Length: 478
Image (cartoon, rainbow, N blue to C red):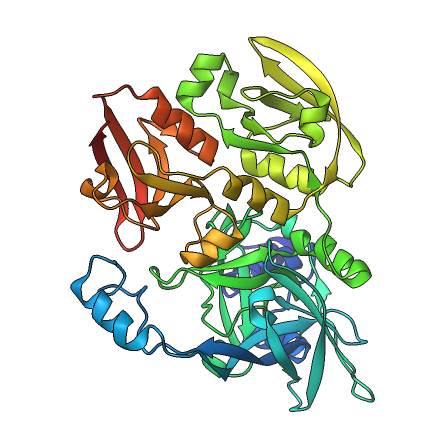
């Protein structure tokens, strides 16, 4: 059959289009059909973005005197027979100071020298050096830090050097499966480029109260911290921050939308101010939803109200369930924490709560969050051991640092009395208690109430997490 000229041309065009598509990434396909243009290959993308990425080296003063760490496995328990031996001969050794060097990454966001990086890259640094791709080095000053999100803003004086700033994208519209590129200095290997896809969004990894990470399989290693995660349009959509040491090829980045407001505050005020409601909260479980008559597990349960803080003054009570805030349905503790944190201090919010089966709207004036005040509340709740011989404390920056844990939910065992029921059952310092008799434990008050509910002679089932052992259950007869 003879083909007409138009039919022939149509078929040629179809073949050409499918040929191009077969060698294109999904985002390049978007470019072909009129959407946001993409770089046609990773080489072009790297060439455009790499000059904005910097190497950050720091020098910190660290105190160290003991030759052996008693926190390591094998020397961690006071019961270990070798503990007294090493403590006797090395425990009293005078601490010495030495300089510790470390490497990280960052990226230029303004041509006059402002650079974003991770807080843990520059925290407690005596000296910060920034090295450009040209090889030029500059001393940097810290403009501001936010440990809660692990973000920091530093600045160099470029003088006559021409700096190239990155373009900031929109992490909200980022989709799982899209291609991304990570640029940084893994293991001190300068300006390394790796590629992968977005594996997940909204990941909570227990690093802090505002966890909302982008997960990617683009290789991220020590030294990548603070470097950019870039989409195929050449825009930064995340700050590479953490890795999962137990799983190769899994990295986490802070969404750039979360960072934008924080960086703006750091540049203006040198610190971040967050809203504070003054309550302890937990997610609604299936059992709690049935007990309180909550549909679809929407809302969060108030476990405690801090005296004198906004919620207390407005009349909010423990066991109230927050259903909405300013008309927005609240589905999780993470969502509520984020909304309140981003609410301006002194702003007034309307909270719809469920109390005794009836809905009620309460107006609350938001205050400023002070993390040290929150730590004080938790640490003040523990004064003496309970009937099991266990002392616990709330999880806060101080206890987390002392016991080297990143857990954010539960209470931590700080002491176990010798010969007590707790010690005989195998409870150890540093154990994170998550539940007692299937009741969620989110604070010291929760723990005390749960223990007091158990009658003499009944069994206390303690569900907890132990470092290097995972989740375990301990049973104790009270």
